[in-house]
Image 1 (tube, rainbow, N blue to C red):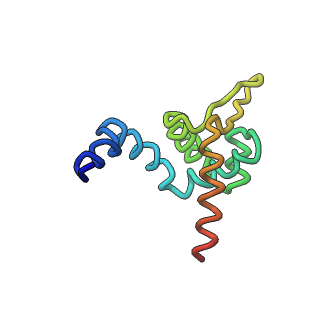
Image 2 (cartoon, rainbow, N blue to C red; image 1 turned 180 degrees about the vertical axis):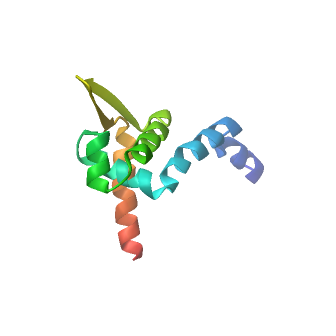
Image 3 (cartoon, rainbow, N blue to C red; image 1 turned 90 degrees about the horizontal axis):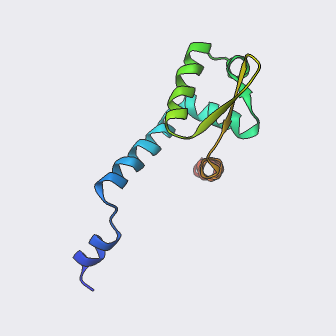
Amino acid sequence: MRIEEIVEQYLPCEKVLTDMTSFFRIFGDNTRLKIISLLSVCEVCVSDISKLLKLNQTTVSHQLSVLKKGNIVNCRRVGKTIYYFICNDFVENMMEVGVRQAQDII
């Protein structure tokens, strides 16, 4: 098999590459990584995320919106309180591997 055929067979199409770029871009922000790490432990509401991570509630809400649009988190309402949680098992695994990788580099 020629190299061109191999590349053509295994290189993802432009849409898949664009979707992958959007997905991985989500992990390029420290605040979002903190929120994902926290939500990997348990479901949490915005005010508790804000207190635990020492972040402004507006910042937390904005970042949760980004994570929700990226299908990383979802939420459920209990009365007036909305609890956020990781809805993508792959993300939890990826975070675990990423942390281990980063610790090995240091």
